[in-house]
Length: 349
Ligand code: TXA
Ligand code: MG
View 1 (cartoon, helix red, strand yellow):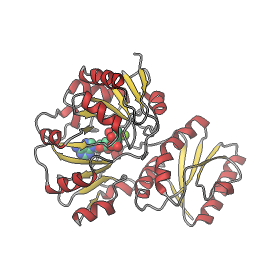
View 2: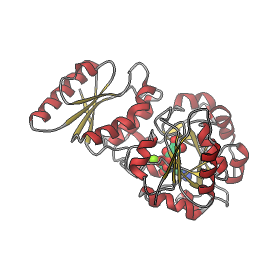
View 3: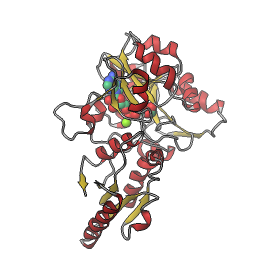
View 4: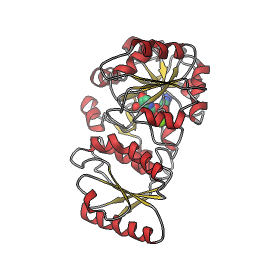
């Protein structure tokens, strides 16, 4: 299949492009589009056959449910059977934005979209192009990240083309995304609400809204007895081809250890990638060194994380050594994705 690729400049919605995307979605096709978090691969969420095409294009396990994207609260009331008080509070404050909430589904949402579950994940994105595509496509668009299953999520249209070019009908290219890690997932069908995936809407922000917020304990553990509650979080994904190891500890010690391991591997003929920061990159003597952002503002690290992992794939390194991050604020989402990409391979110094 030939994939149509159409560019849209920020603040200049192109009606022809949006119209085309809407037509494809309404007739059961697949359209990738930018959101503020990562690029999504869209299909009509209420058309079971269309949603199934997403699984085929991504190579996604069929038990991994999709997020339904909407643009208004009326749409929410049609696809869920109950809207708890906490959901109104969170929606008021963080919708549209990088927050997904889990509700009990209504009968119009097919099981093919929810991976057989009686709950449905819903997100109202803030990205102008995303909203236009959702509305043009009928208002209920299932959209997982637009990567091949197992690869890092796409933060640019080029990443989508790399993974899915020739397998989907259209890519709407809106340039690089703002945030760079996927939305926070909050299950509001349980009390207290529980975070199933950390993102830009942090635990601190949600705690301020309703006091108590639980966190799925399986998220930061390796081989936890209980599988993560978001089915997608159990797969080793976000992963580059090379083996990734995270080095944790005080900054100077971390730099020393990464230099030591890198030189050992290079002497043995290895090709080593290093993930450093503005504060440290000058201190790495060998290997393929990439700056992922500044420690002063871990949102910059979130923004570059997936692109850096993909760049290392292109450089053909066989191992990657990464510094670790605070775990506070959006740093929590960064560490969750980084540890998963590393298969929880961590060295403490
Ligand atoms: O930022 C995002 O959320 C992006 C953009 C495109 O909106 N989408 C995204 O979708 O990250 P995806 O499919 O890559 O991740 C969806 C996650 C998976 O881990 C899935 O298991 C979980 O949401 N999920 C979906 N429905 C669920 C449900 N009913 N219960 C628990 N987890 C659910
Ligand atoms: Mg994904």
